[in-house]
Amino acid sequence: MEIRVKKLFNGCVSIRDYKVNQALKNKEGINIKLDNEEMFIPYSQLLEGKKSNLAIRSRWGDNVYDLIDYKFIPNQGKLI
Image (tube, rainbow, N blue to C red; front, side, top):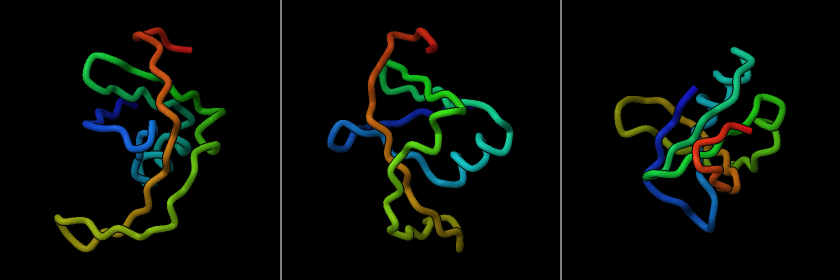
């Protein structure tokens, strides 16, 4: 799964919990792209993110989600 992000917060990327749950269900990792840098989070490390416990309501409907933060460590496009 590939996710593009626009910014970092305190050196972390925030991924919506339903995207992480989808990757866990499909037993796949997440490739995160920020500008010209990218980072790969393997399936085995997806549960290591820090959940925000702050319910966010979507602008486009009644969906509610949490954010899960991961420290952004770019690896210049090489998947680890």
